Each structure stands twice: as structure tokens, then as C-alpha cells.
Amino acid sequence: FLRKRELVGPKVSKSLSEVVANLFLPCLLFSNVAGTFSLDAFFKWLPLILFSVGHTVIGCTLGYLIGRFVIRLKGDDLRYVVACSGFGHTTSIELLMIASLTEVLQLVTGEPAGDDSAATRAVSYILIYTIFITIFRWTIAYGLLEPSPDSLDHAPLEGEYELTHQHQEDDGDEEEREDSEETPKSGGSTPRSARDTLKKYSRSSPEAHVKLSFGDKLKASLNTPVYVALFSLLVGSIPPVKGLFFGENAIFYDSVVKATEGCGRAVYPIVIVILGFNLGMPKEQFQSHASKTEMAGVTITRLILMPLIGMALVMPLFNAGVIYDSVMAFVIMVEFSAPTAINLLVIAALHQSHEARMSKLLLVQYVAGIFTLTA
Image (cartoon, rainbow, N blue to C red; front, side, top):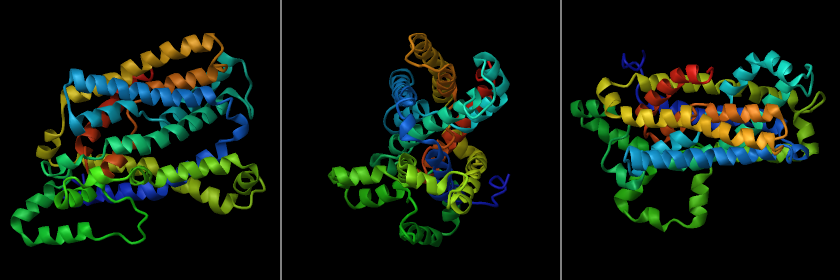
């Protein structure tokens, strides 16, 4: 509503995404990951960890095959389809399903409620799965959704419709915008739009991106959520350090953990607001980025092909005893059935790329997911 009324501009989406990526999401990761992860249980969770890797590989491979040979996409469009096909939602939907199926899980497994009940283990499995998928999402998907230098000179940034319109009325605004875009932000901790950075270097030297060293590329692939996820794994791996934050008598539980838990709860409401901003784009711009064939391909991949593949992999391994826990098998199949991760919209907004098309794709998938997840 605010976007359609032009009460907020396109930069609001990017600003909110930066707040999510640098504050709220790291808080959510630390409060969930550090408290759940433990080296003692690492080998018990190994099938889950391997499936998180396989999930990413299978989804990205399917996305590439469908995007390249069925939809016949190339470049940034193909990478967008690969990212949306390979990275599914991992936390809130699954936790809500477990909460609603607690009694069913107890009846199926024959286990009473308790600290090691089926529902409690399911929540732990979901959070462990989330840890590794989050690292993959903010490295692999982050790179896939980053616009290539070749595309920077051929397409305007998504969300610049209003700015372009204003530019036609006042040429001086463009100069002011360019100056503000090139001004570094204080502190240096906020991820700057890779699109803006690449545009700057592509104008001065088209080959600049080719000369990056391996260290520079590795550093560019790391960001605040990845750093916090790795730090959280480290905290969870060292019992004396973990004891300072988690437990009844933990020194920093009230001052740090409870605060991060509160901030972490803001992630999904803010992402929904970002989704609403993008759905409120001007009709001309929104339709120019929407492809029915593309949406159908990604939606079929995420909501039909991935669940079938997940079931085909999990059931034989469960019957063979490789997946030793029926609750773990259930969680893995649910993870394979989830729609595209809504957090990809945060990455798209940070890059100022693919926002409109992804917003429409997410809306379609989450509506369709009501029927596929409950089938």
C-alpha cells in the first residue's frame, strides 16, 4: 500500500535488507545455532548434514537443467533459476509443522513427551539442517544472485523506476544520487550492493573483476551471516564457552542470549514487509520482470520434483538403517518439500537484482505450498 501510494521509495527495501542481514539474522543464527550444536552429537547428525549438502546439489542441478534446456535461459537469468531451485525454506514452516504434529509424532513413535521426545528431536534436527543450509545460502546463493558485470550496463537496477521518473523532471537529482551511492558507509560492516561496486569497476576497467585473487574472491563470498554462523558453531563446539551463554546459570544468558532471541524474531516479519514493498512496484516494472514459464519451472522443481526425489532417497536409506531415526527421516522429507527460501529476497534486495520476479515467485510458491505441504 505504501509503495503504491509512493509514500516510500525503492531504497527502503535495500535498507531493511541490510538491517536484516547485519543485525536480526545474525541474532537469530547465534541464539539457535550456538545453543543447539554440539560436537558430541555431530556423528549422530551426520546423515542430516550430508542430506543438507545433497539437497543443495540436487536442487541447483535441477534448476540448471530446467533453466538451461527447458526454459533456455542464460547468464543472470539462469543463475537466478538455479538459486531459487536449490535453496528452500528451512526454519519457520518446518517448526510450525512440527508444533502442529507433536501429538501425531508421539503416537507414531510411541514416545512420551520429554526432553528427548520426538518433537524435541525434530526441532533440533531442523535447526541443525538450518545451520548448514544458511551457510550455503549466504555463500553459494549470494554469489548466484549477484549480477554479472556484463548485465550492469544493459539493465537499470530493480527498484529504480521512481528514480528514473524523477530524473526526467529534475536532472540534478541524478548527480546527487550518484554521489550518495559512491559514498562509503561508516563502519564498513554493512554489505554494500555488489551491483553498485561492480558498476563502478566495470566503468573504469571492464576486466577488473577477472584480476581478483583467490583470497579476494573468498573474502567477497563471506558476509555477516556466514561469519556469525561459523562463530556460533565454534561456541557450540567448546563446552566451557557454550556454558557461559546457555544453561540455567549461564552468565550471559539473560544479557546476551535473550536479547539475540528477541532480535531474531524480527527476521520473518521484516522479510514479509520487504516482500510487500516489492509486490507494490509500479505495474510496468513488475510485469517486465515476471515470466510465467520461469515461475512454473521453479515452482514445479521446488514443490513437486524435490519432494519426490527426497522421498526416493530417504525411504531406502531409512529401511537400510543409514537414517536411524524415523523423526530425522520425516524432517528431511519436509525440508525437501519446502518452497524457495524467503531469505533469498533479502539477498536479492542487497544486490538490487531480481527483486520483482522473486517477490512474485515467492507469493505463488507459498500459496501453492499450502496444498503441496498438506497433501
